[in-house]
Length: 157
Image (cartoon, rainbow, N blue to C red; front, side, top):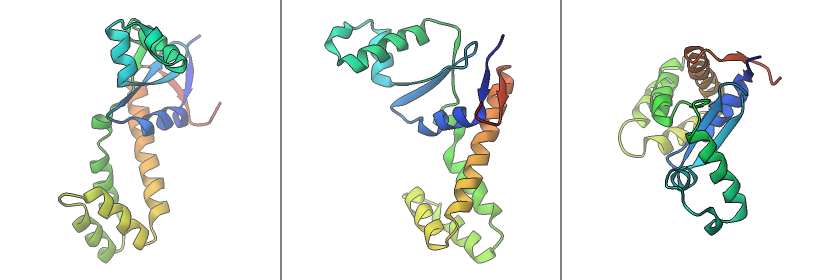
């Protein structure tokens, strides 16, 4: 029987992906694994894991399993998620013309992310932003799961 994965779990993993971490899904079991670049590198280079702390040794062993198996698929990367595009789409979705124009102005140029965070706070629309972002991440996750022919559910089961 094929695994059925929770959209919420996939989105939670996608949400922690960074330059230093990658997440993977076992297409058969539904197991989600997040690994640091250091752990992946140690597994690829077949480093002596005794030189690492015990907790990290387990993760390096898991990284070896992930990279040596066709069962694990990398979740969408932060480049595929494209946070700036999600922010821009949110700005365009704001109904209030003044707030919309202010947000669009704030996301231009260097420091856009921090100016955006300050602006949504000042305008009291943080909850709307987090809800919008969550929905966009869910759409990305669903598209990815469907492309990879992985069954999913929208609840936590």
